[in-house]
Image 1 (spheres, one colour):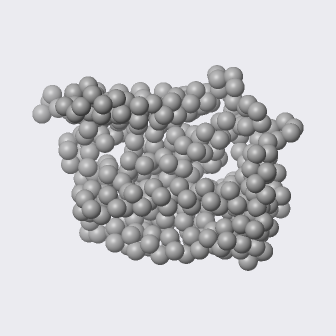
Image 2 (cartoon, rainbow, N blue to C red):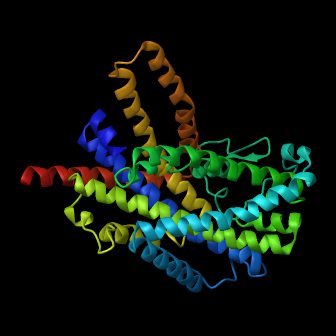
Image 3 (cartoon, rainbow, N blue to C red):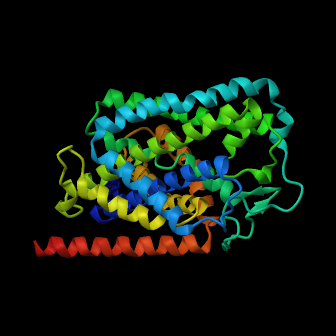
Length: 377
């Protein structure tokens, strides 16, 4: 979408949006190894608390997983695509079984239950961090993790466009449409079953609780299968996210927005230095907790996609030649996502604001460096 933003507001804005979108993507990629290890920890080592675990060993495992996954991406899109297709069928099977087994056990009244006591911090410090917005908890709902997890589930929806140069328009269109349906249903149905068919209290939900719910619904075998499938599905998401992010950097380099170094390809036709740059950022984020990584990724993506929406309004509504009715439809269509973006920004913690400010300053410096380089050439 950076080229559309560039068309609407100029080269500098296009570069900034591309940079923020990439930062959001690689930050998001850091969440997958962290969440994968959380599933393994909660299912097989629940007796080890966060305070008792070996920090260096924990980071070493995360770093090892990340390096192996990046190497798979380095081997090319064919390897990533075939592995992701296989992972999809293996990982979705236990959730389908959990939905089928759990339907007769569902009590719809549980869907409307809220905590009766004080809201507890979930699995990390995402609630303990302070922000300036006063209403973080309302009617028993902890809105900061709630909004951020909702937003995270659809974070990076525009990354499908990064594959446009290597697939046909029909394939891209069908893939985007089918993925929207599958992603929505694969989140909604298991959540409805798990919250309605188990006795897990709301404040007991944390990363890895799907496995606990699966054990309660179908038995230990189903919980173990969910751990395995959730783990490998997170790895598949890492594959696709890392591929899209590296292609974005390569595309920006091909268009002259970044140094030509990042457009160089490996013998497997993958952007080597773009992958290495993403790996460095992810390694720096791995020590953070899952909830904080999600919030940081959402904040950067929120800044990027807000400018993309404004570019859409500029090109389609202000400068577009369509009818007034269609322009009104476009304007109404933008209201809900813009309000959601505002909610994400308002509910962010002070630490996230500092992160966002640093990202923006670095992005502005990147634009200045680009202009200086262009003037010298």
